[in-house]
Picture (cartoon, one colour):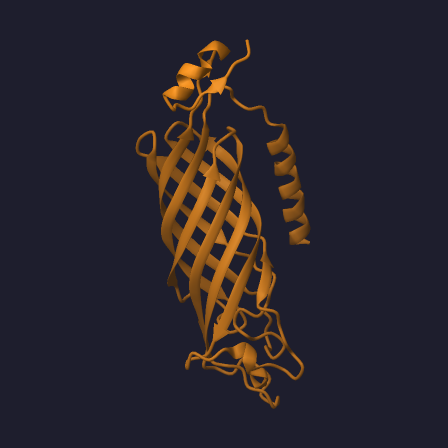
Length: 247
């Protein structure tokens, strides 16, 4: 049901994004984000966001339009799940791992809705669609996907998952090009195996990764100036970037 609402939200923003008029006074801009964050996994093994580990983020956000823009994001991080109490079926012949460290690389494309946008301040809400590759390891750095005795009989999983990430953030530009931003993100992965545990759990908890991210931002402007056609050769010789006007 929630995924249905998310899909409706994405389609609505995409429609508005496609039909929003471009501001001719604005230049084409790309905002590059490079930064770090802390990540935590809530799962069948760890039922609360309580263990936070560092990770890295890189993003390219487009600034063509005023209210809705696209963003391409990449994340690399590790999350830890641990629970030494018995929260699974003790009568099973299989025993889940008590400690799991999961390595994750994810990427997604998001549509960013600017709730408040000024020349320096920007509060935004974003929803995306992406994919994540994850690899759970035990305390001895051995891949748990290769240990079927840590899951139920015949229980296998694919370590590639679709994601529906949700963001809430704030961005501040110090000057015309540099700034910083912070955001809260829920990865909302569709796989229940980030902790290598699903069927043996007595109390089901849907896996989700929460992150708090901070990044440095740099704004690239691809600026164009309209000139008459008869000035093209002179401009070309000076190796400047212009948009040619045929008026």
